[in-house]
Image (cartoon, rainbow, N blue to C red; front, side, top):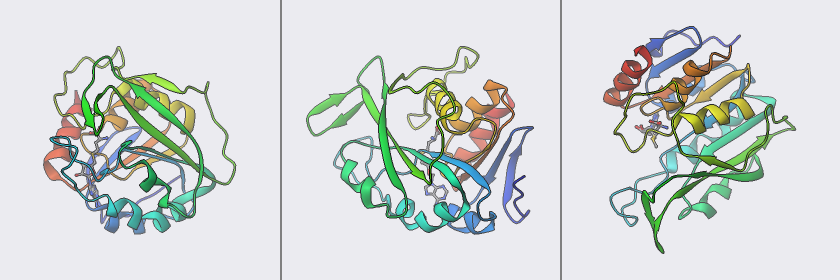
Length: 219
Ligand SMILES: C[S@@+](CC[C@H](N)C(=O)[O-])C[C@H]1O[C@@H](n2cnc3c(N)ncnc32)[C@H](O)[C@@H]1O
């Protein structure tokens, strides 16, 4: 079982979830090597929402590659939401092998790309070793909420809980899953709703976001 030293600022601890307020660059080194079954995350993409030209840095994501590789078990998944504008950037990872891409399909266009508005978002699947897919493989997942999650979250970064639950089932069944950029906590919320005995550990550096995630988890 994964144990994280208490230096991390735990702001939510549930039966199957742990949310740590802190910088992933400081918390990851506290996690034992080869203790994580999957990383499923939604990193800073290097692209803002207000305009597709407003950049924010995705460097921290690439900076952490060695740590991601170290904490993952020998056969494990590295799965992340991404923007299609910056698709080529995702292939900067050197240690992980690219497998395939999945799509979240929204009912309405909700963000912009250089060709106009779009209604989908890519999720990229990389791997370390030869892990197995643990549930029926899907390529296109509807961007909707789980029926049991009926809270309206207005934050655009909050990812649809149905998609997060599908990713957990395919790549993290019963294991330890790490989300180093947990934001408002959609992966943890989805995990709590599924009732499967896996542990999801989230790290979020923004206190307001982490507190909102803890609030959602307590609902
Ligand atoms: C795209 S958002 C994640 C949204 C999340 N999936 C959700 O459903 O709310 C990326 C998050 O990474 C966080 N972040 C950026 N750099 C970080 C770092 N060094 N350590 C921890 N979190 C970080 C940001 O504060 C932001 O909340």
